[in-house]
Picture 1 (cartoon, one colour):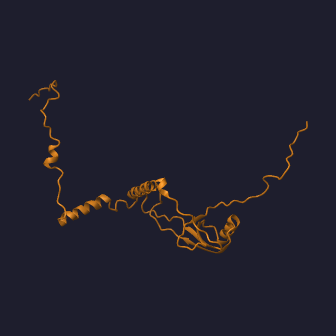
Picture 2: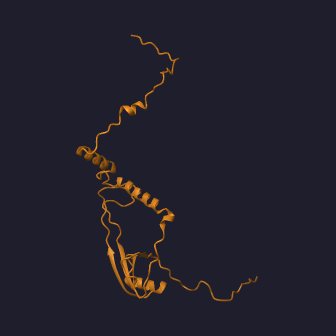
Length: 198
């Protein structure tokens, strides 16, 4: 039995090898650097020649010089994001490698978008509140005084200096708002209590 094959004319597809990078480069916004410089956060195993070749082959940017340094992170008492904080277990986050390249042509950052359309104030307020709540669950959370304690100390200082007077909450005026001015009514009339034998 003969099988018929469809012959396609034109270039063969899928034969050209394409190499895509398996790492992530983060371009940093650096307003203090001149426009011919760009700064990146790169993986620890990336070297200067790799970054130069990457920028030339992907974006066609000729690079004249590359500077790199490794920023060691501070020692922490516990892993960030841990469900149960464990005190006295030291942890050092992974180091960050940064590279600064000097280009032949200047690069200008686009203007910062207006973030008020996306309610940036609410996002920042929620993030600040989340960070304050996380401080309570740190290993040293009980040693840090709370905001309430600081406000009570401020009120006590003002009282001792005589700038404020002591105010009690049980004034006659406040109690009078809750007084019953109507006639007393017995609610449960049909209840008969058993007599106690002596």
